[in-house]
Amino acid sequence: MLCRFIKLQTGEMLRKKTTVALYLALLCLVLYNFLSNVFTYRGTDIVEMIQPMKLLLLSNDNRLSFFLLMCWPLLVVLPAGFGYLSDKQAGEIPLLQARVGWKTYLTGKCIAAFIATFLVFTLPFLIEIGLNCLAFPLQAIGDIWNHSTISEYYVFMVRSYLFHQIYLLSPYLYAVLCTLLFGLMSGILAVFTVAVSTFSFMKYKILAFIPGYVLLSLVGLLRQLIPSIRVDTHYYYYLSLFSVGDKSTAGYLIVACAMLALSACIVAGKSRKDFLA
Image (cartoon, rainbow, N blue to C red):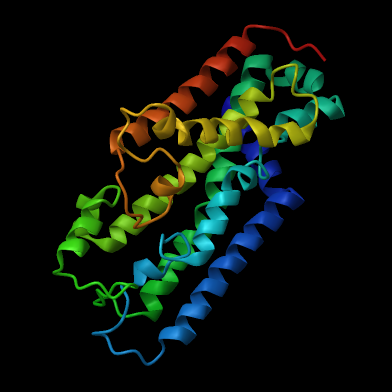
């Protein structure tokens, strides 16, 4: 029953106009970035060519990346964040609760929100990785800022990458891994939004934009509020590829797991209570 409900809910979320529009918008951004790079670097000698993965839309060196990631906490709500509130406003929850059960409904809604959001925020960027591998020489190792690969600053820069050991093993594996993590974090934030939207004070859809944004803003301020924290806490440094700075891989994973655990606790607590319209 749960698997069937998740499949139905995921399909419904992916067919929504806002979801399709967001996916197409991300795909257009990816294609625009790809074509811009093709025309910019056509005819460039391989010795001077930038490493293909550093030309990606999610790369820290990309100007569009900054604006995309600044809007990310709001965009991530669009595919599935309104799911529960839409059902509640349409009066469909009592019917769905009678058909599948309250616990199955909440659990399935959150899992479907994760899957739908993960797909929307992963597939366009995986497509771009494939396009860059086809269009640009895989042997290129150049840096967009023209840093020598044997300079001390370049070594420092690479060591500050999140999961830099994987980058040293393969920049392409690193790009795929970070893209998948970007999708996972998008899915986790969507689940958190759905979970918080089950509270009675969440009466309007526009309020769904607030929980994730506020949570990430508070986490981003931790370094300023607690002087003993010596690493970057703003999500931008962890979601953008090849970002330079003091980062904590353990801290990143702890925050992700904490968000997921908090969402699970909210859903578990709400599952024990009957739905009240």
